[in-house]
Amino acid sequence: MNKYESIIIINPNCTAEALKALEEKVTGLINSNGKVESVENMGKKKLAYEIKKNSEATYMLFNFEAKPESIAELERNYRIMDDILKFIVVRKEV
Image (cartoon, rainbow, N blue to C red; front, top):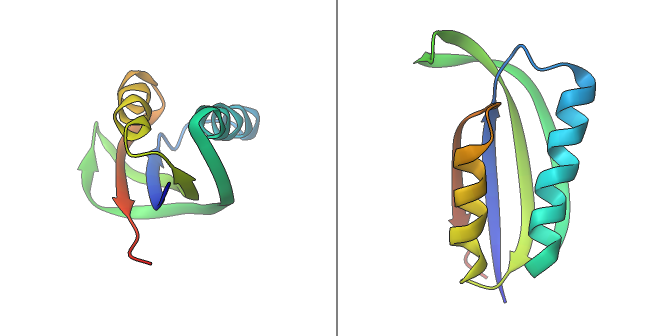
């Protein structure tokens, strides 16, 4: 298993309950094929450029271990979640 980090940029209009539900959903997806090490809600930040007519968004950072094959499935799920504006998954060097 490799170590990864993933940052997701979330719609700023998300309520606190929706953010918590989204965090639990992503954590569940990762835990099905790996192990979440930490989750950090980085709060609302101003964006460098507008994304889907939003000038600010909420950032969330996930550090986790997973099998390389499971990353494609995780990214597929990110794409179909309505509240996620952008995302990136990066493999960490050990």
